[in-house]
Image 1 (cartoon, rainbow, N blue to C red):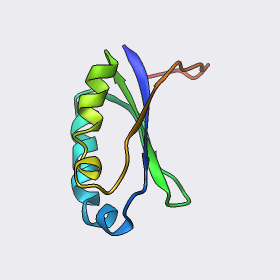
Image 2: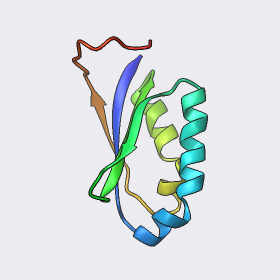
Image 3: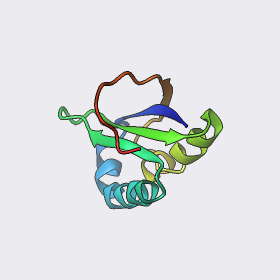
Length: 92
């Protein structure tokens, strides 16, 4: 499995509020599928970050671009493969 950092910079604050529940439900579904390592919003309200744990760039592109924030134009979607370095004990 690979890790991908998906930045979701703010495009439209009103749409972000409007589609927040759908976005959170989508992330919850992906968590249950084991595809999300971590996620959260930026404290300065400029967007958020989702770190996906999936097999390929193609897979993460498909998942990230189906997020309601992205499909509804509330957020942009910027994807980077992440080579994590950590001494933390991970749940996987």
